Length: 338
Image (cartoon, rainbow, N blue to C red; front, side, top):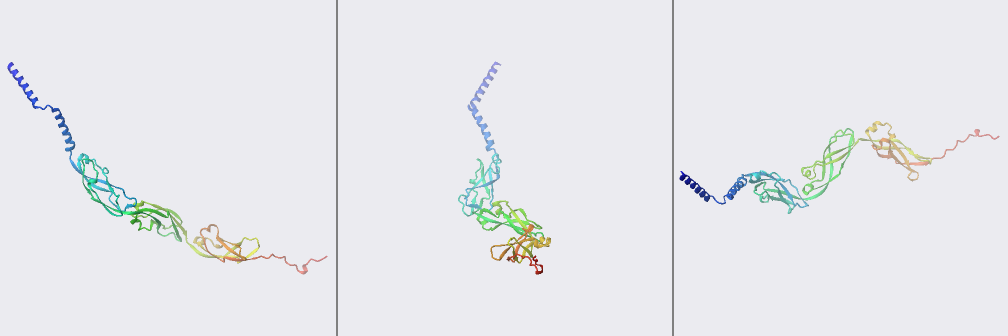
């Protein structure tokens, strides 16, 4: 029995020594390398490669100051990228940009290729294609133009009323933009102003009626419209208007009345039967021998609504008034001498 035990022990020792001889002495380093290789394969080599479409904004740089892009162009392009799933899926709109250098631009049409090697993407990601593959720019000279603002109206005022004028504030607007766009314009027009039924002056804020090209240049713009509305007038000949004489010299004028031709609001004519009372006529001495000039002005509330067309006569004559003598006594009424 002892012999067998010794034999078994000797075999175990021999097996252990043989196994140690077969196992590399640097097994620890090799084991660590194996673990690192597995981890690296998982995060890099083992990550799936995927494709993704991303919208990439265009960034225009170095545009000359005297030029402007006059056409509507795509502000972003669609880019197809490819790479590891973990990287590609993190890329969102705005993470990648495409610069368009227009330093060499001149008036006319330019075609810029969307070359994939000029699009900067993260390491490990590549650009497969772009849509569209080019961008077209129409370059034009940049000019400044002063344009008058004109109102556009529709409808009818209340009966017997007139739209005398529409004053715009501001009267003109200065616009800077492409020569091709501004050269075709003579004025700016407002959106339609509905004046139906109006019977008095008013002030309104009105947007301008702008085409898309102008809207891009100045945006939504409003102006102030002052509508001056007045009642219709009728022409009247008012005779017998007395002439006043502010004179202390005892002069008499001939004739003593004038005829006034004036434009009067209809309501004023209806309300006043004595139209002579609407006017003040004054004879003014302007140094002409024997003559005076007649000045006529409206009176009271009619001052702003009445327009004098003509005064007849405009010149009157005057004469010095002789002092009156006491009446002569009859002979039989003469005082008797005592």
